[in-house]
Length: 398
Image (tube, rainbow, N blue to C red; front, side):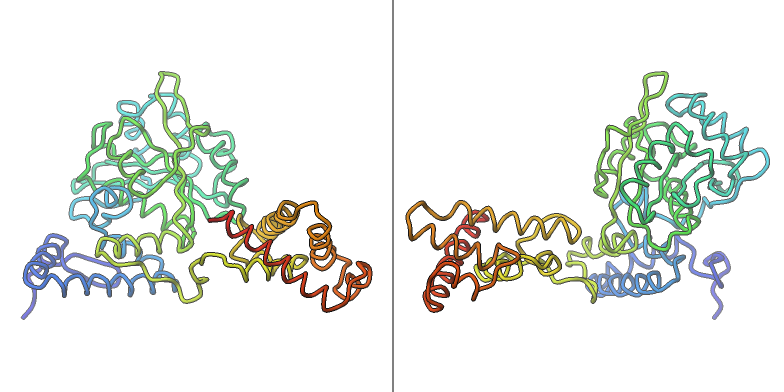
């Protein structure tokens, strides 16, 4: 029996249920069998995440639609709409967008002057949204360090934000938004509007990034919905990058780290969290960190001059091999200097551990000979000295 035409809508590669029908069916399933609905949502999230990370980037739209938190859906989630769609720039869009921008955006004409140039010289970096009457209702401008037009370096927003991104994110896996504006809503925003979400998802898909790690978000503090969204996704306000307008307004810069799994992993994890489940750990992810113990300190002493081994130690802090290795080396050598006293026996133990482990040109046989102790005495005192250092380090970390 054929479905009624109005129950279907066009989709990539065919047709799918109309959004209203789909929501009704989901609500009915949840009412009749909530556990089954939760399990289906989890399996669908896993399936879509696997496809998206495998190269089918476009399915991030369907993955995002599984998120139910209305605050997150406003900005990154709600991507299907029966009334709105995204489009490329058309003739006349620049003039109309300018009128709408000036009427609602902080900074008025001064702000639009920078955005207008993208319509003229880089329309491929502009996404527009239209409603069911084909009227312009939203504008988004977003770039990456790789696809930003040359004039972006002089832009009052993108100039400093791109410079910061290039310094701090050298691999370029970042999308920097200049604007993402719902021109159909008041400045304080409308939580039920799908405009910002469909603009942002389209910008991601057009960015050329397959799974972005970072986002620079322009947040208008007058927009309560935008402020709540930034907080909900864990974006960090960077006051030094805020843009102040000539009329006393401000557009805040919020930097969002989507995590090691990128925006795709963040979205999948949001679904898991709503289901009350722990997000799955990637098969190739390192095991979760464990608390350091005495043996870790002894091992650090043994490999004190091997940066890779030191960097892998549970004692390490920081990022990168050099920084992590240096943190362990500083911790251990500092303990050696503080744990021993001034008596002859204490000084001997310190010299044994220094010659045996801290001295890069040392060696146990040579150390025993130079310190004029038997081999058995040397190793017995070395074990005691290592235990003392381990106790000191672990107690300090407790």
